[in-house]
Length: 95
Image (cartoon, rainbow, N blue to C red; front, side, top):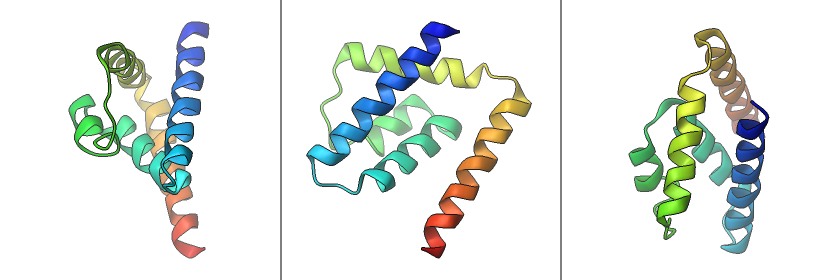
Protein backbone atom coordinates (compact mmCIF):
# COMPACT_ATOMS: atom_id res chain seq x y z
CA UNK A 1 0.00 0.00 0.00
CA UNK A 2 2.88 2.35 0.78
CA UNK A 3 4.29 1.89 -2.74
CA UNK A 4 0.90 2.67 -4.29
CA UNK A 5 0.62 5.86 -2.27
CA UNK A 6 4.10 6.92 -3.32
CA UNK A 7 3.31 6.19 -6.96
CA UNK A 8 0.13 8.25 -6.74
CA UNK A 9 1.96 11.17 -5.14
CA UNK A 10 4.68 11.13 -7.79
CA UNK A 11 2.10 10.97 -10.58
CA UNK A 12 0.17 13.91 -9.15
CA UNK A 13 3.29 16.05 -8.76
CA UNK A 14 4.38 15.29 -12.32
CA UNK A 15 0.96 16.06 -13.75
CA UNK A 16 0.70 19.36 -11.92
CA UNK A 17 4.20 20.24 -13.12
CA UNK A 18 3.30 19.41 -16.73
CA UNK A 19 0.24 21.64 -16.52
CA UNK A 20 2.26 24.53 -15.09
CA UNK A 21 5.05 24.10 -17.64
CA UNK A 22 2.64 24.37 -20.55
CA UNK A 23 0.84 27.40 -19.15
CA UNK A 24 -2.36 25.38 -18.89
CA UNK A 25 -4.61 25.95 -15.90
CA UNK A 26 -3.19 23.25 -13.65
CA UNK A 27 -6.37 22.80 -11.61
CA UNK A 28 -8.45 22.25 -14.77
CA UNK A 29 -5.91 19.76 -16.11
CA UNK A 30 -5.66 17.99 -12.76
CA UNK A 31 -9.42 17.68 -12.34
CA UNK A 32 -9.83 16.34 -15.90
CA UNK A 33 -7.01 13.88 -15.29
CA UNK A 34 -8.40 12.78 -11.93
CA UNK A 35 -11.93 12.36 -13.29
CA UNK A 36 -10.65 10.21 -16.16
CA UNK A 37 -8.44 8.24 -13.79
CA UNK A 38 -11.38 7.48 -11.50
CA UNK A 39 -14.04 6.58 -14.05
CA UNK A 40 -12.31 6.23 -17.41
CA UNK A 41 -9.83 3.87 -19.00
CA UNK A 42 -6.09 4.26 -19.54
CA UNK A 43 -6.80 4.84 -23.24
CA UNK A 44 -9.12 7.71 -22.33
CA UNK A 45 -6.28 9.27 -20.35
CA UNK A 46 -4.06 9.28 -23.44
CA UNK A 47 -6.82 10.55 -25.73
CA UNK A 48 -8.03 13.16 -23.22
CA UNK A 49 -5.97 15.00 -20.62
CA UNK A 50 -2.63 13.53 -21.73
CA UNK A 51 -3.21 13.91 -25.48
CA UNK A 52 -0.89 16.94 -25.66
CA UNK A 53 2.02 15.00 -24.19
CA UNK A 54 4.37 12.32 -25.43
CA UNK A 55 3.78 9.63 -22.80
CA UNK A 56 6.62 7.12 -22.91
CA UNK A 57 6.25 3.39 -22.30
CA UNK A 58 7.42 3.55 -18.67
CA UNK A 59 4.95 6.33 -17.86
CA UNK A 60 2.16 4.36 -19.58
CA UNK A 61 3.06 1.31 -17.48
CA UNK A 62 2.98 3.42 -14.31
CA UNK A 63 -0.38 4.94 -15.25
CA UNK A 64 -1.81 1.50 -16.02
CA UNK A 65 -0.65 0.27 -12.61
CA UNK A 66 -2.08 3.36 -10.91
CA UNK A 67 -5.40 2.86 -12.71
CA UNK A 68 -5.40 -0.77 -11.60
CA UNK A 69 -4.90 0.30 -7.98
CA UNK A 70 -7.83 2.68 -8.24
CA UNK A 71 -10.01 0.07 -9.95
CA UNK A 72 -9.22 -2.39 -7.15
CA UNK A 73 -10.37 -0.06 -4.38
CA UNK A 74 -13.38 -1.18 -2.42
CA UNK A 75 -16.48 0.10 -4.24
CA UNK A 76 -17.42 2.25 -1.24
CA UNK A 77 -14.03 3.99 -1.26
CA UNK A 78 -14.08 4.58 -4.99
CA UNK A 79 -17.60 5.98 -4.74
CA UNK A 80 -16.44 8.39 -2.02
CA UNK A 81 -13.60 9.59 -4.24
CA UNK A 82 -16.04 10.18 -7.09
CA UNK A 83 -18.36 12.09 -4.74
CA UNK A 84 -15.43 14.22 -3.60
CA UNK A 85 -14.49 14.95 -7.20
CA UNK A 86 -18.07 15.96 -7.99
CA UNK A 87 -18.06 18.24 -4.95
CA UNK A 88 -14.79 19.89 -6.02
CA UNK A 89 -15.97 20.30 -9.60
CA UNK A 90 -19.20 21.84 -8.33
CA UNK A 91 -17.30 24.35 -6.18
CA UNK A 92 -15.15 25.34 -9.19
CA UNK A 93 -18.29 26.03 -11.23
CA UNK A 94 -19.50 28.40 -8.51
CA UNK A 95 -16.23 30.35 -8.44
